[in-house]
Image 1: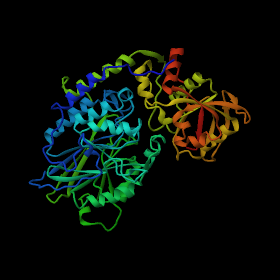
Image 2: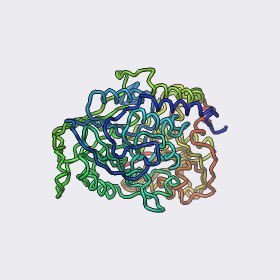
Image 3: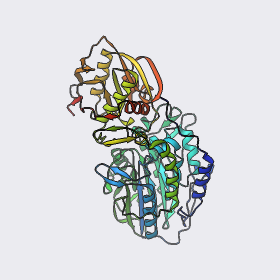
Image 4: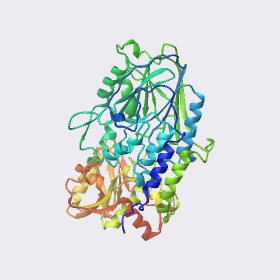
Length: 549
């Protein structure tokens, strides 16, 4: 079986198409000045630009529209617990345009991880993503961990054509300590000067493949943002942080940095139905920090473009926030989309290219294999078992382990297409085998039990037993239905992301030997398994039981 690759399309035709679309009137034209506007030129990647503007009049309200973790999901789909036929970038663009037509001052912001998660990224590596977000009229996003999945060079190349900014104040080059991306942007809406800052969190940065962040250094988010916010606060009316740190970390940032008025978050895919007001800890602050809220608003809007969040601020002439409200609007069929809109033509054109390679049915499953966000890191799930068993069959291994984040979506009951495999398994991780003794497997599982809740979750194949997270040990471990033999040498299969040392792979496989990279993708092994078996019954869940969680 060969790895599946895109067909050799005449790329120039679609490049010309995108260029024409980007030049059309689908883009929002901001009448007010942008003091550090993003542009498709090198200047867009300067770390900071300052300026002044004469303010003739000020709007009495400001609306912030926000999304996060789109992960290249540009078509409507069914999302368990959140509805059927939801999402879609064309609906998002129509909704944003509608809000802009009714409100005097609107910002459109994103919390990161625009890239990766569907065939739109697998085949086109961000080209569609940047074009679509530009069409929507976004002002800025922040670096997410998946936004450099194909390396920094690819990210910089794709963003040469962006009409919005990719911000990050706390990722610097190891070579000279200089920021890789613009740290902030100042723009004007409704006569108000607004400072935007970007930062990525420690947890998000740590899950970037080590080879992709080899030349990068993470600066503590509080240190980087606090300093920059203090510098911006006297120069602007409001300071907004775009954060890819996760919701709980955003709460900590709000407590630590009173100069922040709003935090637009991402990474944890948190459903924050209404903005959370975090009261600043008592401390001596300058008058400009007295924003009328007495704290910082923190928002996040789940994932995949299911919702567009909104924060509506009513303002006093002095620039204090008198009242605020907010919530999430579902992108569903109630939003009217012009079928001839440029963004519809863009998505349809690229989707037709994808369908030629991904519409074929490759197998069937007899029951849904769900993959809930709130349990995938703490439970042994059927979908994880299925993938691991496919990898074991592909290599003849006795045991399999992958990080839970290697799988992105559920598989629904019924026929499975190649496109669904790309959605569920979008990463270019290859299958790696190694030899490992039974006693070392026991030590590996004890490490997972001892650090449960502190480290990422994993999915397993071929292994069963009990992991006691309170006593921090394992018991009743079996491999292939037989008791674990401490002296036996087993064949283990994993993915290159883990074997390269990411997400504790260095610790898990420290005793592994004869490591061999097959060169085949994890997705290829699943395809091969479906092709051979045609119909799959979901494996039994919880073959590894975690006690004490």
